[in-house]
Length: 145
Image (cartoon, rainbow, N blue to C red; front, top):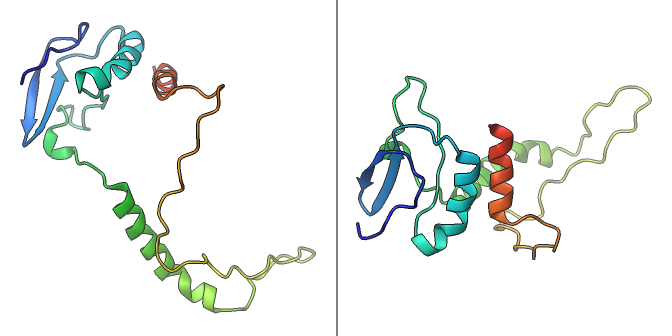
């Protein structure tokens, strides 16, 4: 590998699996609440994405064979197809669900207006007051700690 690791990382080692290279620290960083936001802001320049993960239930480090890139669009399309398959009988039955006495039933749910996953919604522009992704991640990390 031809890049320099960022300053402040605890001792550790590289793991490689195909084109993926992961730095695994031997210990949890003491100053992770300062280190994490800095690594996030440096990720584009360095080409390294910080990732925090807990050891598995047996106390062994998580290996690369357990890390998988998620193709969100494919996963959501599959989940939608399964959801639609399970719900279709209810959508085809015009009988409203029973409601307690004195409660007006909701109109029958006809289901989604499409038969296949329509895709992700378009990205919205960030408002001036919205936190940057790095700030939101650092805030969540602080909350976890």
